[in-house]
Amino acid sequence: MSIDPAALTPIELTDGLRTSVADRLSAHDRIELPLDGRRHAAVAIVVVDSTAGSDRTDPHPFDDADMRVIPGYEPGVDDSLHGRMVDVSGGASFVLCRRSSRLNKHAGQWALPGGRLDAGESPVGAALRETHEEVGVLFDESHVLGLLDDYATRSGYVMTPVVVWGGADVTLAPSPDEVLAAYRVGLHQLARPDSPRFVDIPESDRPVVQVPLGGDLIHAPTGAVLVQFRWLCIDGRPSIDSRVADFEQPVFAWG
Image 1 (cartoon, one colour):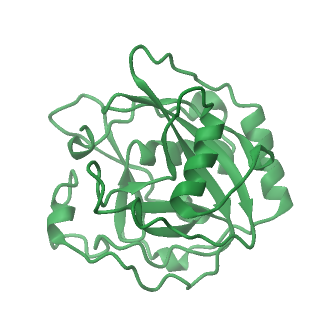
Image 2 (cartoon, rainbow, N blue to C red; image 1 turned 90 degrees about the vertical axis):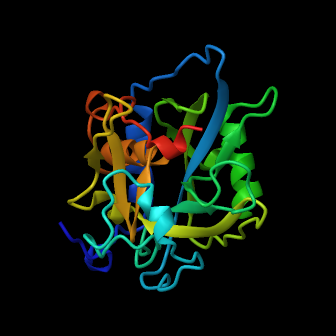
């Protein structure tokens, strides 16, 4: 199925949306995982405003070699997959980062603002700190709407997703040491009729989740977090129907 991202209807950033998301998170029967020797990390789903058509270009150069590692990708079969994050802005959005090529691990990959917890730090504190460090926006805990389920990554982390209401008039200033570019992706893009999609891989009996956004596919752990955010906070599904723990990561993200 070929979808024109620019043809989808944006979701307006309103107080009503904030209340709805906060209420659904408050009622959420959240899964909290024990660390069991794993490290603890937190990511932020930062909800901000955006202007449709403001993202006609992407500073990241396309490299077909990057696309070839994606499970199920076939060169020349789907022209909509070109690796660029364009035509995705408009209305209520979340902040998505492409990691800097300078990083030792997962360079160039898609990620939400976030990182490892410092000693004595809470997941909320870490998510807010990392948002400030990575995209230059400082929020306090009054901006936090709630938490999604913990997700265990193949690289040995328990990831706690924190939903943050950034609101309107937010200026992003990505740190070049950590972030190549920060994008405002409309929440309506998560509700595409072809999303999420799943691919089988021989290395696992769990399905690899793929979230089509712009001209690329977002994989777990980020993709899993975004699917639960959509199902729970946008679609209003009950917690039992919004679980994503069994969604697999592609092999390139296991390290």
